[in-house]
Length: 228
Image 1 (cartoon, rainbow, N blue to C red):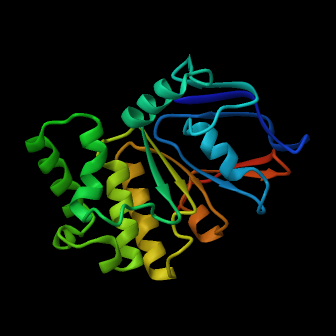
Image 2: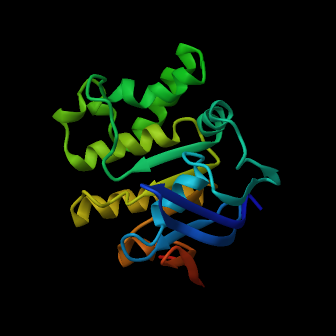
């Protein structure tokens, strides 16, 4: 078991009005799972993903990673944990415009204080795998949306994380480019990376082995299938 959530809840207060994000979520994610989280807008999908990625802290409940309660980590300890164990893929890519493709992918390794020679080896290895080696000197605004998402995916996995969290990873791509990204995520999963993905797309969800459906902040169904 990689992750377990116990009665996980998150609420937000704004002008003395409390809004529930998710309520009493209990789920188990095993090493090597590919899980899709689906549901209507505002149902709590991204809230759950942010909690799993330690980008936010729960109001109540626990998040266990390999049995360790990480839900009470300090901001500094959470950042260190994310750096070492989690890769993020966002809908809007979140690339740094002032860095070229190589530098964007290299950045997490710089934070991990990896030696320059090893950084270069890892970056070129993942760029070649994702077929973007020829885009190394280009800046994000000089490449297509599909190529930007490949760069974002390369940045997410260059540290060889145990867990990849993807929030609508194909949301800004056309169908052909979106399929390429999903096939890359599926390939990563086949090689042992655990993937948890938020999506509105049934096509994307079909790649997953397990589909969680949220409604009004609650887990309402959990379906298991073999994926594509």
